[in-house]
Length: 283
Image 1: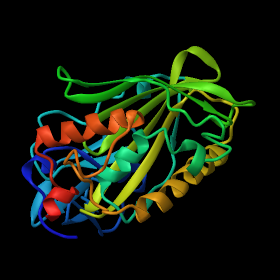
Image 2: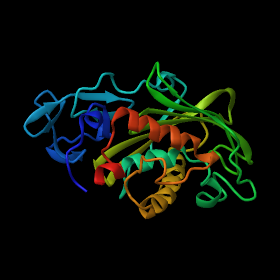
Image 3: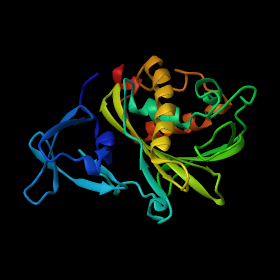
Image 4: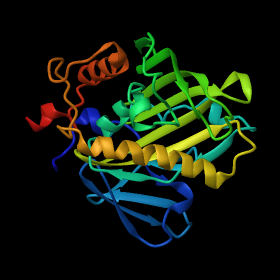
């Protein structure tokens, strides 16, 4: 589905790829239904253009970011990314024929772990999503879910046995979400898993999983393979959801107690006036 994005969607920073992979020769990309032209200038700096206009560029967290609008804030702040003992592991990208908002919402959902990621992130009979706390933090304009916990047979590459994993979810922008989870190697620190979503069209997106983790044992190849496995399992579910666009009306899909983060996320999107990638826009 094509069509221009509204200002509420345009006014954010979007990840469009790995910074180190920025082309030496001109190439094409696409964001929010707009064609992007990427190139390097004579000094080697990355230049991004859309409709003859030069767009702002940021290289942050090893990724390349741009915007088609006028964001009120800079690229999402991830303090953990600056810690010297963390490993930065970009896990490639996956194209999904679904709304980018659906992808973010799926990332927040713990209930599907035992059924979609069986033997890895969940397993029967451990299917209950225990009560957790959700809030829209008005001071930073973000959605958070805290006090989350779920039994996982293999919560990370470095995990030897199943553990009750503690989670915190953070939605920093409509298309940027982060997961802070139990670190098997440190009791007082969190591993950070980011998901940067590039909405190509309303119902087609590219997702970039990126890790900032405290693991000096697992190989880079195995870490990437682990995350790719998880996301490819999710892609099957995402591409079979109907509608592909995210409904925002409360009665469109019936939530349960386990969907508290989804309810908060949808309410926040509606408050912000986001319609790109929603069923309301299609209607």
